[in-house]
Length: 183
Image (tube, rainbow, N blue to C red; front, side):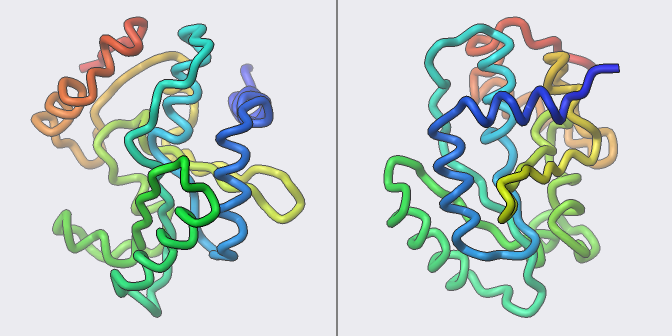
């Protein structure tokens, strides 16, 4: 059986840009957070497509959970701190303790629940760098979809129209032509 966590760990350890981003995020000392979505998904897809240059990220999603402070001001402060540390990255910070409101869901209990609601299974992934330099992964549906290049709507929160729109707008099938669209 393939150890997708080990493969992903090795991939991250050889990616200077992502390691610098992980170190910057760790300095915020948030308890329940991940660098998520394209940050991890795109790294795997780029690797599997043999790309020597990283596909540019629109942004780096840092998602966290803090039910005691749901203010957008805190998100903005965290974004400012990250931009100060790593100005070459475009950061988007979101507290999952309030994101359920945008989707009409019951309140999430943690960051993993928020990530598990995203549109594509392959996007429902995240990683953080722990104080001992180990990685903690969030992959409620596993990392196998990413490593097998499968692109599938999240069956636990199906939004097929948004799924199709995102694939087209983000140009994924042109950027990564080996992706397999699963219906």
